[in-house]
Length: 245
Image 1 (tube, rainbow, N blue to C red):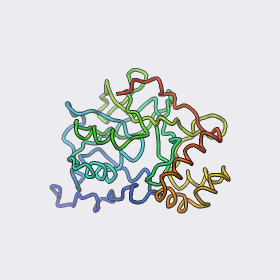
Image 2: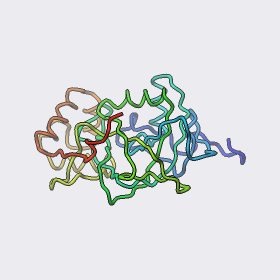
Image 3: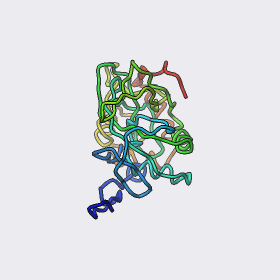
Image 4: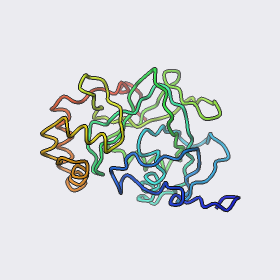
């Protein structure tokens, strides 16, 4: 509880649902302010920067406290993670060109110099960073170098270094070659199924069927990922040149 006696659990705050449990909720519920994920609780922060920890810009479910808690708990690693809101310039939230075993099509950053998005920076210690790297097998963790990218915290401070996870399959485009923006899972899957008869053959006609079939069959996910490339629906993120961690 906080000083006023209010409960600060993820459940009480409506932050407890993880996309790995309910894929159509992807990218999950994000907090409305900076805070400290501390196991099952969401607590106030006493500062926005955390020396000794690595700042990672989260564009998808890593900004969901429930998802982050689930990932860290699976490796028996402390789920004490500061999460700070930030204005990130140079990055748009695109669509990864792969189908996850968790049953969703996840987000991946796209280079967009004129775009500024409200995102979260998660501050990870060495053990937590190892876990996140291990749970992102389809991603490379890259450095977003200033001044080409700007990560500005709520107090106006700009980070000199911040990382992001970039999907190494590329990202999906909108049919004209322009990287598509991730609209949320249900809307995205509805669009993708409508655009491809072969994808419907593999994954069914509805978002619910898509998620169920993806979660049940790793080989089907691999087939769907290859289909994106075969149907020429994949483009570069514009971040391929960045230095991998």
